[in-house]
Length: 140
Image (cartoon, rainbow, N blue to C red; front, side):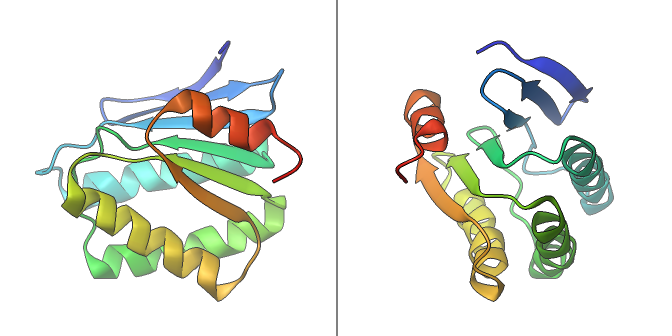
Protein backbone atom coordinates (compact mmCIF):
# COMPACT_ATOMS: atom_id res chain seq x y z
CA UNK A 1 0.00 0.00 0.00
CA UNK A 2 1.08 3.54 -0.71
CA UNK A 3 0.69 5.56 2.48
CA UNK A 4 1.22 9.23 3.31
CA UNK A 5 2.69 9.53 6.81
CA UNK A 6 0.52 11.68 9.09
CA UNK A 7 2.20 10.99 12.46
CA UNK A 8 5.18 9.04 13.73
CA UNK A 9 6.64 8.39 17.17
CA UNK A 10 8.48 5.57 18.89
CA UNK A 11 5.11 3.99 19.70
CA UNK A 12 2.96 4.37 16.62
CA UNK A 13 2.86 5.38 12.98
CA UNK A 14 -0.26 6.74 11.31
CA UNK A 15 -0.55 6.75 7.53
CA UNK A 16 -3.24 7.76 5.03
CA UNK A 17 -3.84 5.75 1.86
CA UNK A 18 -5.64 8.21 -0.38
CA UNK A 19 -6.36 5.72 -3.16
CA UNK A 20 -8.12 3.25 -0.82
CA UNK A 21 -9.30 5.94 1.65
CA UNK A 22 -7.91 3.97 4.60
CA UNK A 23 -6.27 5.47 7.68
CA UNK A 24 -3.76 2.97 9.07
CA UNK A 25 -2.23 3.10 12.52
CA UNK A 26 0.59 0.75 13.43
CA UNK A 27 1.18 0.40 17.15
CA UNK A 28 4.47 -0.52 18.80
CA UNK A 29 3.73 -0.16 22.50
CA UNK A 30 5.95 -2.05 24.95
CA UNK A 31 4.36 -3.70 27.94
CA UNK A 32 6.08 -1.21 30.26
CA UNK A 33 5.04 2.05 28.54
CA UNK A 34 3.75 4.56 31.07
CA UNK A 35 0.04 5.27 31.11
CA UNK A 36 0.76 8.96 30.51
CA UNK A 37 2.78 8.21 27.36
CA UNK A 38 0.12 5.78 26.16
CA UNK A 39 -2.63 8.36 26.64
CA UNK A 40 -0.55 10.92 24.76
CA UNK A 41 -0.32 8.46 21.85
CA UNK A 42 -4.09 7.97 21.95
CA UNK A 43 -4.56 11.75 21.86
CA UNK A 44 -2.29 11.96 18.79
CA UNK A 45 -4.19 9.08 17.16
CA UNK A 46 -7.56 10.73 17.83
CA UNK A 47 -6.34 14.10 16.49
CA UNK A 48 -5.11 12.61 13.21
CA UNK A 49 -8.30 10.56 12.92
CA UNK A 50 -10.39 13.68 13.43
CA UNK A 51 -8.32 15.68 10.92
CA UNK A 52 -8.48 12.99 8.21
CA UNK A 53 -12.06 11.87 9.05
CA UNK A 54 -11.77 8.44 7.39
CA UNK A 55 -14.66 6.07 6.83
CA UNK A 56 -12.23 3.12 7.00
CA UNK A 57 -9.68 2.45 9.76
CA UNK A 58 -6.96 -0.21 9.80
CA UNK A 59 -5.27 -0.77 13.16
CA UNK A 60 -2.16 -2.94 13.24
CA UNK A 61 -1.85 -4.01 16.87
CA UNK A 62 0.51 -6.95 16.33
CA UNK A 63 3.26 -5.21 18.35
CA UNK A 64 0.92 -3.54 20.82
CA UNK A 65 2.01 -5.22 24.03
CA UNK A 66 0.68 -2.69 26.53
CA UNK A 67 -2.16 -4.06 28.65
CA UNK A 68 -4.62 -1.15 28.74
CA UNK A 69 -5.91 -0.56 32.30
CA UNK A 70 -9.71 -0.42 32.73
CA UNK A 71 -9.76 3.31 33.58
CA UNK A 72 -7.76 4.06 30.43
CA UNK A 73 -10.10 1.82 28.40
CA UNK A 74 -13.00 3.92 29.68
CA UNK A 75 -11.11 7.15 28.93
CA UNK A 76 -10.49 5.93 25.35
CA UNK A 77 -14.14 4.86 24.95
CA UNK A 78 -15.44 8.27 26.02
CA UNK A 79 -13.38 9.97 23.33
CA UNK A 80 -13.69 7.33 20.59
CA UNK A 81 -17.47 7.05 20.59
CA UNK A 82 -17.89 10.80 20.11
CA UNK A 83 -15.21 10.97 17.40
CA UNK A 84 -16.37 7.89 15.49
CA UNK A 85 -19.88 9.28 15.40
CA UNK A 86 -18.64 12.72 14.32
CA UNK A 87 -16.57 11.41 11.39
CA UNK A 88 -19.12 8.78 10.32
CA UNK A 89 -16.73 5.83 10.65
CA UNK A 90 -18.06 2.83 8.73
CA UNK A 91 -15.51 0.04 9.25
CA UNK A 92 -12.54 -0.74 11.46
CA UNK A 93 -10.24 -3.70 10.83
CA UNK A 94 -7.92 -4.84 13.58
CA UNK A 95 -4.77 -6.89 13.02
CA UNK A 96 -4.25 -8.44 16.44
CA UNK A 97 -1.26 -9.36 18.54
CA UNK A 98 -0.30 -12.88 19.44
CA UNK A 99 -0.01 -11.68 23.05
CA UNK A 100 -3.39 -12.75 24.41
CA UNK A 101 -3.43 -10.20 27.26
CA UNK A 102 -2.75 -7.10 25.17
CA UNK A 103 -5.14 -8.40 22.51
CA UNK A 104 -7.86 -8.83 25.13
CA UNK A 105 -7.41 -5.28 26.43
CA UNK A 106 -7.71 -3.89 22.88
CA UNK A 107 -10.78 -6.06 22.26
CA UNK A 108 -12.39 -4.96 25.54
CA UNK A 109 -11.84 -1.34 24.65
CA UNK A 110 -13.30 -1.74 21.16
CA UNK A 111 -16.15 -4.05 22.14
CA UNK A 112 -17.38 -1.47 24.62
CA UNK A 113 -17.03 1.30 22.05
CA UNK A 114 -19.02 -0.58 19.41
CA UNK A 115 -21.59 -2.00 21.81
CA UNK A 116 -22.55 1.40 23.23
CA UNK A 117 -23.38 2.74 19.79
CA UNK A 118 -23.55 0.34 16.87
CA UNK A 119 -21.95 2.87 14.54
CA UNK A 120 -19.47 0.87 12.52
CA UNK A 121 -18.48 -2.66 11.62
CA UNK A 122 -15.52 -4.13 13.49
CA UNK A 123 -13.56 -7.21 12.45
CA UNK A 124 -10.36 -8.87 13.71
CA UNK A 125 -7.70 -10.30 11.39
CA UNK A 126 -4.26 -11.83 11.63
CA UNK A 127 -2.87 -10.25 8.46
CA UNK A 128 -3.05 -6.95 6.60
CA UNK A 129 -4.10 -8.37 3.23
CA UNK A 130 -7.35 -9.86 4.54
CA UNK A 131 -8.02 -6.81 6.69
CA UNK A 132 -7.61 -4.46 3.72
CA UNK A 133 -9.77 -6.67 1.49
CA UNK A 134 -12.55 -6.63 4.06
CA UNK A 135 -12.32 -2.85 4.48
CA UNK A 136 -12.52 -2.19 0.75
CA UNK A 137 -15.23 -4.78 0.03
CA UNK A 138 -18.50 -2.88 -0.18
CA UNK A 139 -20.52 -6.06 0.33
CA UNK A 140 -19.59 -6.32 4.02
